[in-house]
Length: 102
Image (cartoon, rainbow, N blue to C red; front, side):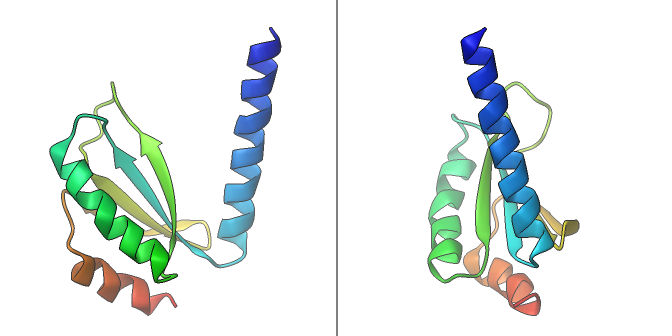
């Protein structure tokens, strides 16, 4: 029972932090991946570069066991999905889209 409360507490904190970031106009990339996806592994350095350049905050979402194709990225600005990428995306392509929202 105690573990369920702890999990619920952290889920609430993550939700509130995500909501606050979206409300403040930050650009967030919701990145859907699978642990054993080679294309997802290839995408991670691209996302690290995006984050290091301050272009967006990355929210990693493991979707093992779901039907979501991976890798998938949803670009969220002010709480709304403005663009979705399905499959591997090069840094330059992602950069062009993210610069519009800076």
